[in-house]
Length: 266
Image (cartoon, rainbow, N blue to C red; front, side, top):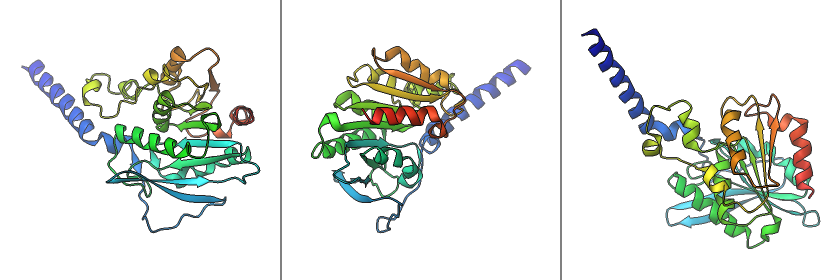
């Protein structure tokens, strides 16, 4: 009788955790900060606000961090992480602009001033529309696609369907299913996970050179998960391990600074 009672408790707990995760997974995976559309941004470097109409119900808001025309070498399409909005990630822009690259940083649907319903498909479509807008001004050989954390899944998918100079990923994951599976391995994630982001599959279709940065002490996206991407990299692609690097401090390491500067000077 005791075994039967404990079995019922285990099944109940299993079901409860599964239901809670399925119901609240978007709030777990994404923590956006909304900004009033009539508010003004203030950044310590030149910028322009740009709107792109994705469809009748969704508009993408992006910040175009500019460089003088005489110094401009190209464009970085920067897809940020899962928290906050552009304000949280603006501090990473200077390394690109210092090297002559303008930066376009869009906010995902429901982040910042962007509107629309957040979904994996919507994020891919948004990225595609941003790329199409960029192509009005830049050739593919002048466009670097950059993804950070959650944004790496968007960046890989875009690079798999559109040409670019280089794909650069900071703290990526092999796939969202494999990442969440580290903690919820006992659940059928293929069925219940609304955000799959199969970077490992899209990476196989990326023609551009790829550079990946990941810290060995990353407590959010374990190094062991990201390093699985090595299996789908092409000859000439690179996976740069930052010893003792965590999820949020890679830009403080000289190795990443030096390597990123080198890539941007090519």
